[in-house]
Length: 121
Image 1 (tube, one colour):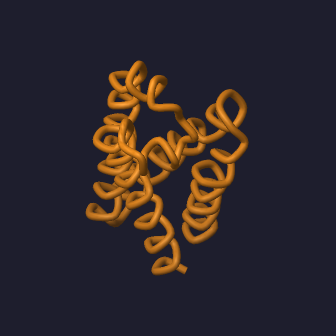
Image 2 (cartoon, one colour):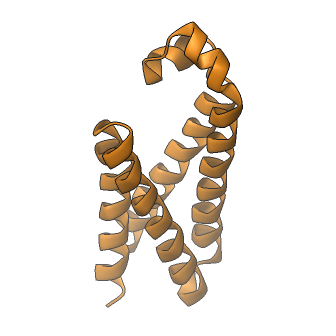
């Protein structure tokens, strides 16, 4: 169970690193615009906001990686905290931006949190 939980958490961290790249570096490029369904004009107007959002996704990835690196009880608390942050961000994004965020961000975080809690009860 611990290995499966670590794999899920690592995948979530990698997803958030990818979100960082998309939002900070690819936002105005065709691949970034396609990923988010943006017009070139809107992408250009919102690129500073997107870069800020990407930075926060990087912090989420770093926190999850930190929890994996720590291991033990300390790592458990760090992973639970950052998975909770990802879950809340995913729920908020799913309610305010697009439902797709529920499946891409919130569902994996809920799975990781459930695995983490079940494996440590």
